[in-house]
Length: 144
Image 1: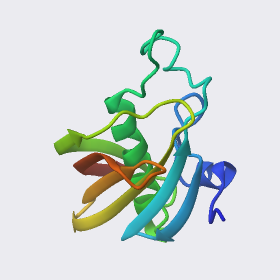
Image 2: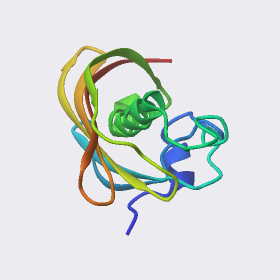
Image 3: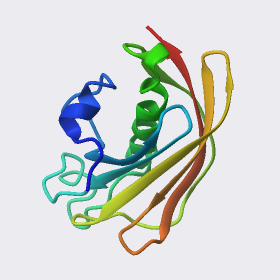
């Protein structure tokens, strides 16, 4: 059962179609941890060209999905309401599996530390079988 649906997510982060890349939030501890989901529909815009003969979700978009989940975590704090999370860094990113049409990603971000308005987190995406497909350390800056 979703804690937040896509309309509720839009109340927290500024992303909109076609670039809102998370469908629901299942768990949320504001400023600490989030678990979100992305259901890969066959008509996702990237599958048409990446690749026509073998549709695969681009790694950079999976990193963006994790970042958007992390933004929900950070921007759900009352003091961050109305701000925007900008990417500040991606470290130690590893892609461990393909994500195909019909797959569902579970996106988990745990905030490790804050330095002022800069947040640092560990991000993991797993598929519906529980296999890790992406791991990374991400950082972002909160701004207006």
